[in-house]
Length: 289
Image (cartoon, rainbow, N blue to C red; front, side, top):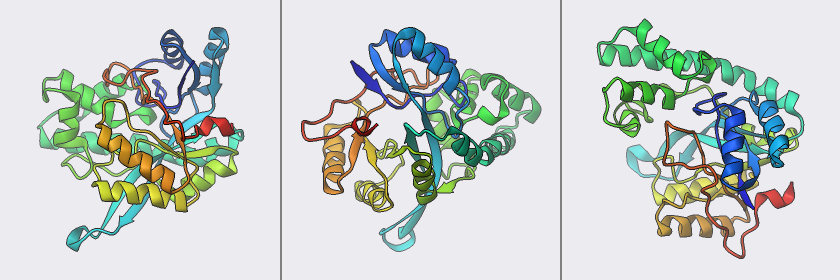
């Protein structure tokens, strides 16, 4: 039985509704699934109903955007501010979680509009047309707009060769159209998850454009702040990267989590149920559920 504790639906920046995400997971042989949409729990009830029909176990999940300052570099790079994603898994107080995340949800629409404004100026595009197209891509829900939706629209308009190129050129951190998202601090995110009865997991530690030294430091600081587990790198990442994360996880006594970070057709290389295997000495965070 496969376990996938990281995926997205149309309630954030995925392309499939929660029911279809669950059905696709079931077809891929997943038995335990967590729907982890960005800063929202909106898809969980629908996913739970679909999981029941499929005979699967659905874990309450969410991916929270957290702000964190990493220190320890040199010169002008001595410290760097990053948005770090923290997965909340198997929490029980959904009302408390929902209320805490509502402000972050509201900020997503504002952020999407500001990114669209920047792009319309950079590329001499009509703002209203572009924003409407992006909203349509996000299921006509401005709160669900993410950079993946925006990248998809740029790609479909022929303005970039791939969705990834949209990030590389315009949307990634510190690129011309980047707008920081309103966020909790990493410690606030961890504390919120614990207060709601869940486990806090550092999502995809190798995808924040950090050096190897800073990835190790991020894992160390996540553990020091009370984090419970760390997501293992995808199978597509180099073996050396996986080994580095394995060493850091062991050094700081963290459990591990596995997830595909499935988004659907806008990121087809991330396939639901395609998750790494644990090493014999590693303990899955789900064993504490």
